[in-house]
Amino acid sequence: MAILTINNLTYQYPSSPQPALKDISLTLESGEFLAVIGANGAGKSSLCYTAAGFIPHFFRGELNGQVLIDGVDSSQSNLNELVLHAGLVFQNPFNQISGSKFTVYEEIAFGLENLGIAREEMKARIDEALALTNIADLGKRSPYALSGGQQQRVALASILVMQPKLLVLDEPTSQLDPIGTQEVFQVIRAMTKRGMTILMAEHKIEQVAEFADRVIALDAGEILLEGTPGEVLTSPLLPERGVGISRYTQVARRAQAMGLWSKQTHLPATLAQAVRGFGGADAAQEVNDAA
Amino acid sequence: MRLETENLGFTYEGGVEALRGIDLVIKAGERAAIVGQNGAGKTTLVKHFNGLLRPTSGTVRVGDVLTSESPVSKLAARVGYVFQNPDEQLFCKTVEEEIIFGPKNLGFTPEKVEALVADALELSDLGTRKDENPYDLSPSWRKMVAMASIIAMDTPIIVLDEPTTGQDALNIARIANIVSTLHARGKTVITITHDIDFCVENFERLIAMAQGRIILDAPMAEGLAERDLLASTYVEQPQLTRLGARLGLARTVGKPDDFLAALQELRQ
Image 1 (cartoon, chains in turn yellow, purple):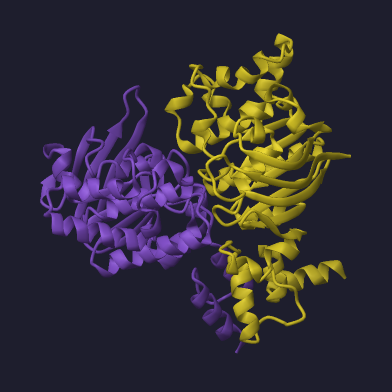
Image 2 (cartoon, each protein chain N blue to C red):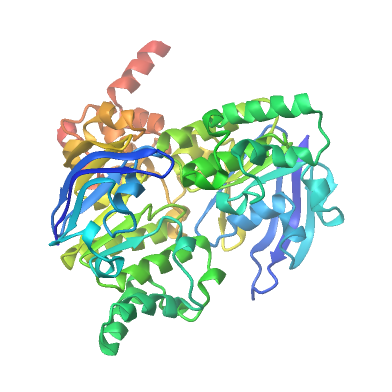
């Protein structure tokens, strides 16, 4: 079942001379994890805002085309209704914190209070979100007295409690250390197993390669590439358009020119693919194991 | 200009002990990267270098002055600090005004201010955006503005707090160029970063922190080899270091050139 359908979307911010998104069409099925990559200004955040209904309801401007969020036409609806279907984790967690709550616990409860959910259910959801994002020990702290990385976890937890069908995340790990980053991706994977659908803008190519089901690369507001992580992340078009690629892809491409990587082997985007392609000891071991 | 901390300790109001017994010397012209898990004390440490924070115990010396005895205005001429979040730093109406503010405040002549601003605009590639309002730019470009406004102050020591966060490949290349240019001019460049691949390609000294202490301080290649120590403070080795280890390369590598050279030796 399609959770997000975008048909021929073109969108222009009120003050901007050109569209931020041009003729975008895409479909996201239930439980799918789509990663969006692209250079700064390629339209990643705009696509996130659109997928969660913040475009056109928070950011005005001119929208052409159709956006269906969990079957609801976003132009015909409003944010109060759309938050029941889609949740957005902002790039800068500071933009998300309500400013009206004194503790992390209250902050995470904030969205639920408006939904009329029973107290027991609220408590269970909040405890789960705190545990999933690994911030159970921060419940009594002020959201403002936290580090950027901790705030980013609070921002994620405050959306997870809402249990949206579509979870939209705009670079949710930018301020996290590598373990924190890995944890967030693990949480996302767990959510997709429960049927949550994910759209995530992200620069961290290694994690995208490992976790995403599908990747689109945006360039100047248009879809440049779409496909599996292996197809998109190793495309020679990415560096040309200012999109970062993994070091594995970089060195394998150079190694290919030096005769150290077989022309028949697809370029790697992950460590495991690179080890196999370079014929490391572990790769030989894996072949033996398979036999 | 030499930077030295002696048995530096710092406790936040409310009792969180963020730094414990930090002994550190960073010599003029070094490129040092500070890594470690969220909450390890990295930002708290560098905020002592320019007097934004004062030691609870121990001392911080910048050149010949103790930070505890110097006004922030004096330290501002010695240590430039680029905030992790540019929004804590920017307040002017245009990019150019923002960049002029620092050097003008340091009392440089109008000619010198003009030259410094032109240089900072060029290094950060902000020339075509100099008349824009910083808040009309994307967060990633606001970060470049924050960096340019500190570069223009021409301080001997520059601290970049998480410079590559949220940046694309082009801006990361610009930041790498800024680091190498400042280094060529003899500046000390210190960064805090979670981006270990950026770190290995642009810095020569690795300092790892955990729970308010320095747990590792070594030349980059040596430091990178300390896999378990780094993992204890949530730092993963660079992609090519991990790949090199899995392939059984003869030495610890971090940069693409070193990786390919070691791979070629292995194959021969």
